[in-house]
Image 1 (cartoon, rainbow, N blue to C red):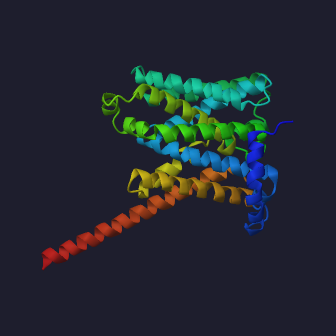
Image 2 (image 1 turned 120 degrees about the vertical axis):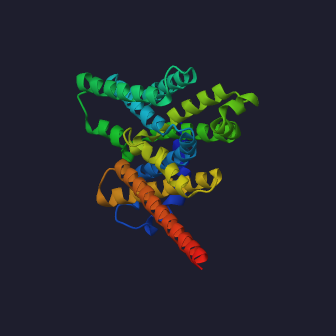
Image 3 (image 1 turned 60 degrees about the vertical axis):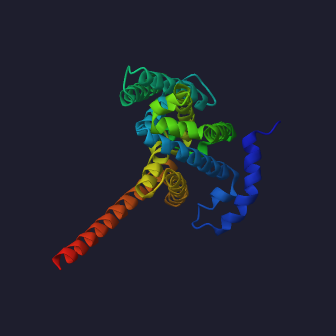
Length: 314
């Protein structure tokens, strides 16, 4: 039987991960480096985090932070339909649903028929409701497998799922490499970019479709209800301390990867859900950075005020 691309990748990286296992803290966490099933989970989490970090930075610049959350709920509707129809890989149904919704949302916004937030909110509630109704009537309700799609379950990732994540990651990174400048131009000033001859409509369609695919790849990592934890929160944290777009992109990767590694560690040792713990760690990082930034700013302002008082007082 021909080996899948993801099998080749796991086989290649296992030689790097296994020696690191004994060096890792905890009783259960080292398994992510030593056992094949856990290695798949770790590789999937790292891949999705890297890709989500790059695209999440652009989502924030475009004021479309809600888009990831909305498309995640749409993907749940696709997963539900796929499960009811007996699909062995319901994420492919989620991909079709999310791509369709992303393109429709973009066209509604492009033609000024609805604002981005309004169209996203409609799809978010409608498709989540569809998924819940379909599962309740024909799918036997919310089972443990369904909860894995809602809140994330890395251990459910098999080689077919990892293949899908790998293909989406490769496509997303390669296209971003070639279209980065055009995307940045349209994000900063779409009218100026259009005057310069950049096909802003096609860039927008590509970006929306790619974000939809990335969201689907994240479903089993953090779940449809917690996608924002890796798509938006690390980028938002980076923007609090980054001084340029490039530094924000780098810091997004740092905060995202730290959230995943620490989230996996705490979830393994405390026996909690991986998706919820990753989301919690990501939110904690945001809170710490926000409080620290605010405290430093207030300290600097007070120091400047006291220096001015001394200067003019004398």
